[in-house]
Length: 119
Image (cartoon, rainbow, N blue to C red; front, side, top):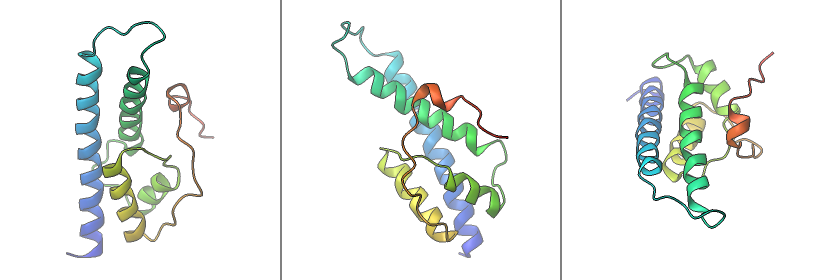
């Protein structure tokens, strides 16, 4: 498999993983038992993880596989994740595209995800 093909496969794998993760977290939040006020710290975490997956999918755009520059821009602005599978695919993409790991882009909170910071 050529480098170009493997990068495309990794990109599609990331998209598929994020779709599956979003759906699983959506279902988990939807069926989550009613929390006791101020006593449930798991539900906000699930909501944050679900929002992260959706936000990453939105950032990936509608184009099935973007150009190498598009992928590099995505990788350069991707925040940290607590999802091991996502982190592994991102690391493989960085290696394949010769993109250094970020200096530690902090995780973005749900409220920040929908703020457009483009010029």
